[in-house]
View 1 (spheres, rainbow, N blue to C red):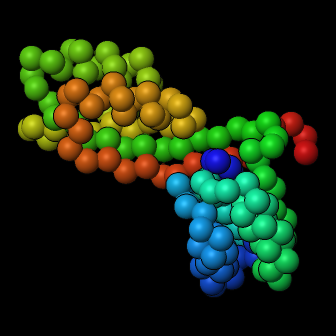
View 2 (cartoon, one colour; view 1 turned 135 degrees about the vertical axis):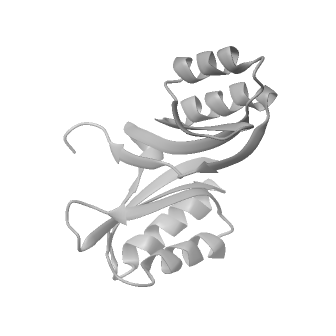
Length: 159
């Protein structure tokens, strides 16, 4: 099963490595991982989208909570949350299909951030479904390279 774990951690060296080791110890596959400072520079938020057995992921969550560098752990899969991901995609640019390609960019609100003689590079931020949708629509045009940031997420509401 796929789950999203969000952790607040002390901003110290090795925290991310310790978390990743916990995932590996329980044979949970990391599908995406994003980490960065919060409004407090001494605290980082780490969001991991992981796939694995429910019991294993529950055990990982318990072990993460026990780490001295971890302040709080939330399993966002069991809550309502907002997620975003950034994707950069470099696509073949065929002059006969440029208008169609630009329509795809417009529908997905993707922004052109670079152009070469043979390729065009766009960026888009959105939830995972929207990112997957853009990628699906661009495949027939020829994706030359792509980079995804990994999901970031927060619980909805005041909590």
